[in-house]
Length: 554
Image (cartoon, rainbow, N blue to C red; front, top):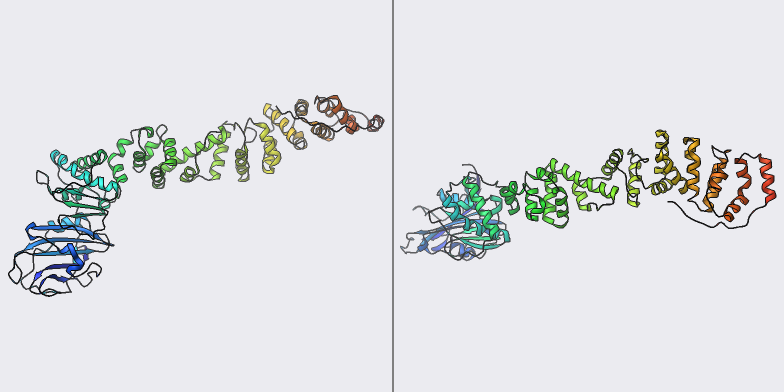
């Protein structure tokens, strides 16, 4: 016989037991655990029995293990006294035997009904080999389902509470064994912390979270509508030949097996957090997440509900399709935050999606290439741009944003951005409105851009840009730009004086001060011979005015 061997013990009345004549342990396996005990005092209610009951059986938890037992009346002992009985006990130290195994042992006659006439007390009783109990689909009629639903709902209510006790009838009105049906339809994993007894003498050492008694006593736990719905659906599925996998170990997973397909046809907004978690734990998760706003709503709910967060993380690890969908949704939110200033996902959602900064940088570049522009290049967006370029991502800067002033500042302050912008400008080779507008902002941010980009700008396009920039500069900026133009690649056109100094529309007093300091240079740019320009400038003298600052960038 295949299966595992388990230590056993037999307690009864006999002319001789291991404790002497009368009631006591008659036999036990050598490895019967000392912590369970081998005496009537240690075993307690486990070996107490009223023979008039005829039979009692059960499974209780003791410490790290389980005890399976059956008690039966015996006709007489060796002294001819009435009221005798036998208790057969089985010890499982690894939580391998469950309700189904208990009932199978009872049903197949593996528990003892009595002792052989020549039996002798022994501490060398061989362990009992127990094969795995087969799980069969119970044949249930509609009347059976109706009769069993309240019974199963009581147990499910206790399981939902996490602890408790309930009493179930031994049989339905039609004669179905309630325990047999319950053990068959419930997954083994769900009943791992459930004890069962038909014995009126309850074992006070039972440590199971949920205790089920078979009898006619008060029901104990009260079943709610949810418990009744679960029970009815589970029994209806069993009547059609479907049983949930034994690996299911909690009610959420059971709900997913029972209802996920139904709930997956509804939107997240119409479901409870528990229902969303069940859908995410089912095979329908990927299909459900692709519909409408379900991905977005599930992520929002996960931020507030731990059960949804846990289910989402598990689903992402289990299903590549779910992972792709969650990743796409989180990435879309991050991009909306960067481009439009919308609220972005929380850090937990980003972690669930498994996104890296590199992923975001690549997605940013792809969006810009498709024509999307950043509305406001704030500090966070600027850091992302800098990081993307540092990672070698090909990010188009000329079409990055309409917030040209912030781009000009970023390019002037961050070398990697400035170098990339110059390289892209050279590679682009164009001169359109985008170039003209950006160059003006660049010159206001840093006059040094003139030397970097002047060779790339058509001569006819530079004067209006110089005037535009000069109008937005303070006195010091105008003077610096004029000097850069006067010594730059386009020197000798007179643009330093006419487009920058005069085009700035500074007050006459400020213009006069600039001329007092830079007149010779400006006149040479305007075509004057150098000697004549220097002579004229010396004859005019220098101004002592301190330049007043002004700002105009719009």
